Image (cartoon, rainbow, N blue to C red; front, side):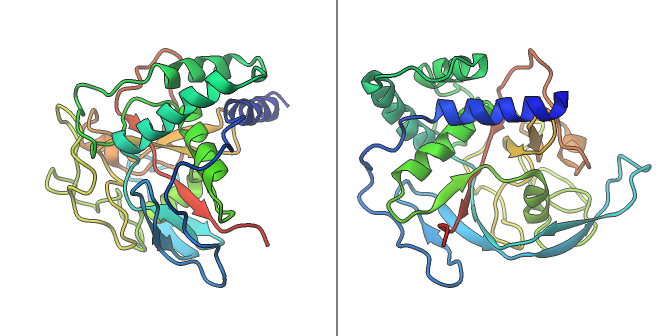
Length: 276
């Protein structure tokens, strides 16, 4: 019961934080409504969304020998942002969020996580370790990332819905259609394949994509994913702050300590078709 209650509370917090984000879209255009199969597209903010087909892939976890080989499934095709969300993209949200907050007539639900995340968004600054527009935003928490997704959904005239990937969907996509690899960049991890054990992240797309056209699923910034457990968010993929072993798949994702620094934590976005 406690676990379920914490997950519900987190969902309410995200909903409250995103309140009021459905104002007049600032984008010059929006991808057309989905009719029939999902198709890749480029969002006006610059995100390229690629199709990850539904299916099943085998997974193993070398650092957890007690965990047997598992099947990771994704039941429906989804569109994933090919790259991690960048500084420029997140700051477009942060600027509009300031306007939304200034014009808001009612305060959101008084939830501590909402208030803390809102303050972080309003005071957001680029990390000096990742100063370029095309560096991944790398100091955001899960509630900030979820608020970004809610904002994108509110701006979408086409009815498209944006969210963080679910934990299982993230792992399925990160495996790129390859069974039993130890990390998103394969069994042999080296610095020609991913940004890790570094002094800062690299611009998005600096390394080769996986089989689904997804970049930086290993390294650069660790990415937020949703779970049905408590806590309701985990980090996947490892970051530039991690060593080589931090990029390996684990069956659980990585949970945060209460006071852990957020440098090295970013996200990518999933796009769903509109409801019929």
